[in-house]
Image (tube, rainbow over all chains, first blue to last red; front, side, top):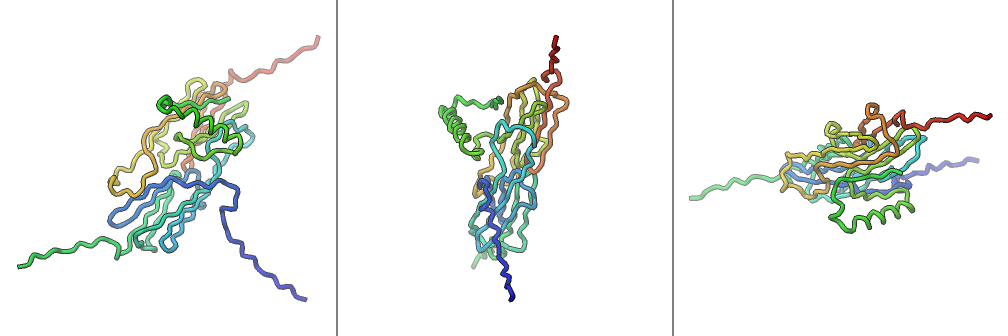
Length: 129
Length: 145
């Protein structure tokens, strides 16, 4: 008798973790060539950030891991381990291959260069006559 | 008990005390309460020998933070600087606040100001404040007669 082993695909869904899900404070600004998304992700290490762009939906997912002192009594708490999750719908077409993301001092900075066809073009005005 | 204090003028907001009460009650039921109205958010741990304070300061250059200790009060002061290269009209969304901040915490005992250590990692500041030797409880031996 053979037993067929079926591989169970476990989808990694971070929301199943028992952590509060926070929406990070985010700044978004646009220049002629790119859209820049800046999000506060305190306590998040580089390896715990996931940025995806699907169709036009940009999703930032992250998990904060802050080492907390052991053997001491917690007397006051305003923050703790958390998940950060937020999605934005982009209105402009971006160049998917040139997206860059970097994290520094707990701030994620995403640079999304606009696709060539979405960049403003200067139209030369010719005088007639 | 530890009493976080703030310099900002709380008298301007008559509901502030109510919000604080609500927050305190919420905290009784939940582990912690994410929306904090003050920057930076703080956590405190204590043991008989030292106090550890952590603060969320994303986007603040560690050079722009000042930790000072006077007696049993520790003060965090600093500034989150704005990226001046971005013209204001190009913002789609602006939620991250910039500017100066300050928060003070009264500790249960005086700390050794020279031995305070602070380090910053991934936008979280961690300050270790060892207890002053002279304030540590002394064990008194009881002699039986």
